[in-house]
Length: 458
Image (tube, rainbow, N blue to C red):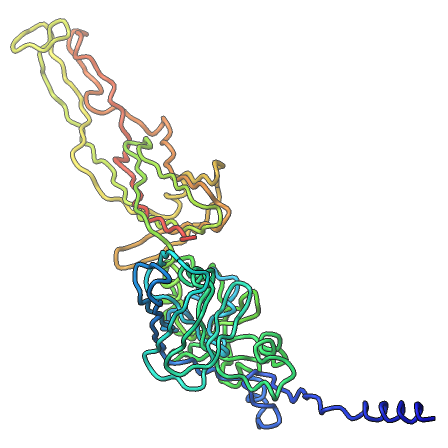
């Protein structure tokens, strides 16, 4: 009976557990529970106020490591205007996880990567901040995750392993400053909560830049409606891989990255296209046809994944010929003589006297130009006309998948050639005049394409 009573007491006591943490709800990851926020927008969207500029020095304890500099500078300064345009225009498949998350602001080494020799397996370092920072947590972010190093104010004295320092110097790991998470209110860490429940939005409205967490349960249309955005366009590569005339009227553009993060910009398409092409290297070339024969061609070899754009400015000149008759020339046995009465000849010449510029249209370029991609003739290549301060040009946009691009002129057909110089001689008494030497010409003096090739940096 005693054992039965004891068992009942143990069972009864087991029912009185400590209250478990409850998921109070924080859809947007701003550490304010939904019940305390009034509007649906506030419950689902968090305006992330980025950390201000932070600068620090990393100092090594003497005798433990040999480096080029004993004091290394770190900073989190980033141009958000440029960064946001980069996200909109460059070939980024996803937004880096550790960039601009409210949990952390990344501190990177300023300057080139550093070489070092270590004498100990553990290294003592001091992280000194330029300005006082209150209630922040310092972490080390590596390829494998994040290691919390503790809270700090102005100075952090740290003991790091050799491989951790090496990774920092190589740019493979970095320090991060985090807001202190109020974990007592949440079942899971705030970081994992945010990554699971929200996506990030970078928004440039033409005046300032904001970064938001948006709950995945909150429709994008509702987010846009809050900012009175009634119409927008999805950015496409075809909008950007060009220098032809683009609208200079600002519009709303949206890009969705592969991890559902979004970039929203109010900007004119010309500026976005110009920014896109900053990631391309440019080279100038010449494709030339003289007297109907191809003389210079262009061969571009590049990475198959790199996109390219060929910008063509054509110039063409035709030759102007004039017929000249040289009358009464005396000949003897086919040779001209000063004075003679054997026979007289009238010699007929077709001589070039000048050149004239000829306008070039799209059909002229298509008829004359031969385009080969990866060794195969590309007959129906795209050709887009544009106009800028230097005049008319045409573009050929080449998407990825092309390693070799060749531009050359077709030779003109034989029927286009005619004899110039001395082409006929008429002599008295059926005498022999001067010998006619073949000198074939076409009306086209030369056709030239000045080519500017843009190749994407990969």
